[in-house]
Image (cartoon, rainbow, N blue to C red):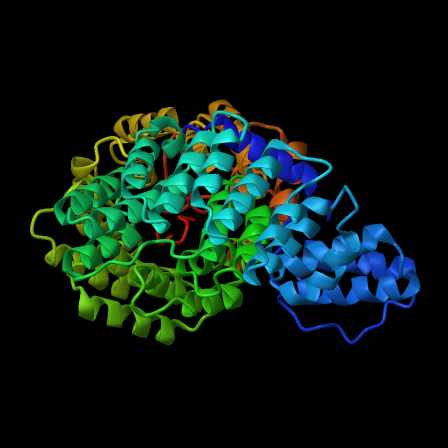
Length: 600
């Protein structure tokens, strides 16, 4: 996806500013520890370890223990401040922020926290003073400038606020955020002509809109709301329909479209300066929530909540980040806090159910999803979620039955429905009912020609069954051409060569797959097998050892340990694909939401 220059600036500045240390951080997963570290160094190291393990409750406790030994240690106080803010303990962070507001290295967070508190108290002049930093990156300038503008708007000076935004300097990517916030301020102030012009200008900024899809989503909601309030409901619906198509059917836009079609009145997206400042932090956070930026995104999202505690978009993003950081309990909590009448509610219920399933609370998960199906029997995402839960539990019969019901509800399948047929094919393949599986893969390709995941799965399945060997290999090659950086698909090509006895070619592809997915046990196992057959037995042993240490499935671990002890048996028919030999099938990249289990 194309990105604006702003995103590079945002990520670089945030990484430089975030002084806590390497590794992802997120909400606490455990209780405050009962153990006492005993020494300053012990408390400090324990805090960092807990932080890197995403256990903020323990990190906070250990930082406080360290400060008991060295109360004036500025680095410790900076770390504690950031951990408290990222964990959502805003009030507890304020006294530390006050102590650190003159420390240049941390003022971008300490003064921001104090500014948020002042804005909540409607101390608008104080906000502007606090937003003056001694050290400012482009990112800081955008945040402080926009929040200062919202303080001016809150003080009843919208024209001064708009002038402040207009004077903001920065990278080209600033433009979308400047114009979007100008539209919101003009809208809140009742300056309808200005608001309309700003909204349209932001919408026309195609390059930056493409680089910030979540901001685009919010822009569309705000502009559509404005259009309805201006008497142009038809224009609002067309705007939402276009955005839904551009963003590949985002459920929140689908639900929002239904709301504006039926509601007599529609509220403005932003009604107060506090909500406006929260929107600044929300759009920034979503812009950096990619490529390992979850920790930084979470920090700004949590800091926005005191300004708008019931903001459903923020709660949804926090739930999504918690799920990515493998904290299903936290994810369930955030998704569960989203209001029943929210456009985010249906999607939140789906994600809540998926996280319940991760915790092995499958009955609760299915109950949630059945409720969603009862209200909309044609919702393919819900069928996919239910099928995914059954597949993760290896109950492929129930998964297949679920997808059968989904297909039965489709009057005229479209390109977007390819996933249903793909998952249905996987379920029947796992049930060893190939006569039912193959037509579903072919139907998925009919709906979405050359879809890499389908090409990969179908091609490998043919080779695995010793049928259509060259055709199967061609399909996998096409998949690799489409996604050369996808380790799972590259692994499939390597393993296909292995099954065909072309071991040198297998090694080449599997080495590349390991580079792309170094942590995957199955891919490392495959490379070990290929090394062995290619006569590189020492390297094979090393690779199997790495696979063993990469947390394979229990049944695979037994096979890997046997190979470490005895190697592979002699080949009976080299160069011919044979069913069920040597190693499990390669993993396959999961389909879009929700993810099925890997093939392997």
